Amino acid sequence: MTMSGRVHGRVALVTGAASGLGAASATALAREGARVLLTDVQDDPGQALATSLGEAARYTRLDVTQEEDWCRAIGFAIATFGALHVLVNNAGIGMLADVESTSLEDWRRVHAVNLDGTFLGCKHAIPAIRASGGGSIINVSSISGIVAGHNLAAYNSSKAAVRHLTKSVALHCARTGSRIRCNSIHPTFVATPILDAMLQATADPEAARRKLASQIPLGAIGEPDDIAFAVVYLASDESKLMTGAELVLDGGLSAR
Image (cartoon, helix red, strand yellow):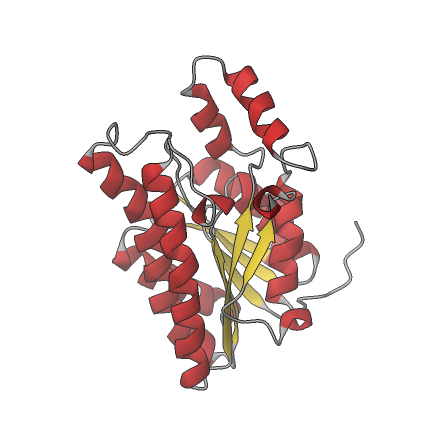
């Protein structure tokens, strides 16, 4: 696809950028003119992707559950690119388990990555984005943050919390005149390593995949680029009137 410069001049930080939605989002942002800091705990694929994107991209390690990692990564983005305008809080993990089968350790681990990581990103990126003249925070939640499942107790809880945290951040930024918008994206099932790992935990992964696709009115599991296009939209001025909102990309699942 030819670059049209929809986010030309912006600097973006993307978490979980070594694969899946994060890799697709980082690639799309770079293609549309942004300079992008890719972050992850998977160093080799993260660095390889950044290298493939050329001078517009860099990679640094970021464990989203560690506050000091956030401070270092944001400082690296500013030192390297001179500003920060866009944060994509994409890093996340999933787990198939009902409430009785979920251990406290697993509950805390899912929330640490999915929720605490998003909180820390928002908290530490806001001053940097404000100082850069404003921009956009994009929190990748899930349709599971809106529609519950019997076997997704921790995942449902963490992603629903991201949905509401997004609204609080949006209102805070509006009230303080920070010129920062904050919105959440709610994808349906998308072909990513997270989904693959969740399906592998079932007795028949392929049957489970077909069942998931059958639950989507449009009849297909999503692709990473479906979400990356939305990230570019929310990072650009095309969405300048949008904050505290939910962009639902679920193939009609929640319309039932």
